[in-house]
Length: 277
Image (cartoon, rainbow, N blue to C red; front, side, top):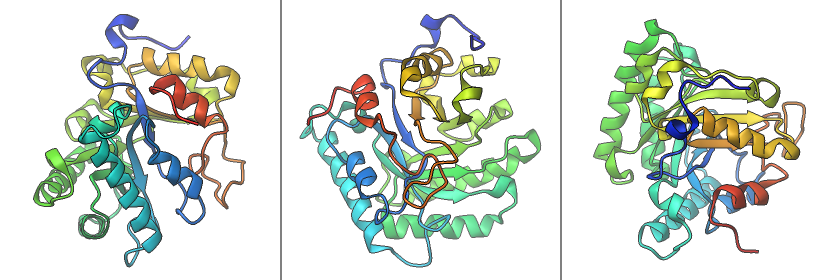
């Protein structure tokens, strides 16, 4: 049984933000057209999805990525204006985030800001996913400097309402101070065999579920309900579960999160308002 820091009633997903998907980064739209089409489908409970062209924004605007980004922007606008009444989760999220690789704190600040500006100028993203974010106390000041600058860039742009969204991709529980540096932390990323027995850090009980995300690969269909219970018990408001694993070859990718899980429709119907066939 996963370690709990508070009663389940205290840690269940808050009514203000329904459980939804965070997509760490599908393959390029040319290689994964079905994946990107599903993200714009009415009723998909999407909090955010990451756009990653070449471990960042690439060297120039990509027309296929521009098209995919445009579809997501339009889907969010329809949800915000009530044109898609079953898109309630998307209306409170639905953002496209640009992928910034922090390389565990080794990438220069200037390079990261240059990539951020390209994402904003070319794709009108609504925030950033800071992949391979360091987790130690010693790196916190540099990460806070970066997230403060990114928030300022997003606030100045016309593409991100409310200053956009920043997600720190630790993949593990970081030093608690990181919770004040961004909007959301990825506190688990790994296989189901580890997740089902994972322990949640006690300090996370001080924050609502919308502050945490879990990404789990290798989740069998028969354990999908159990995986969702673990996420709720541990206080994660954003999830991405897949039955794919690192040994799968899908769309030329070894990343298990680069393609749809085989039970996509089922998990959408479990956490969202249902999908139309």
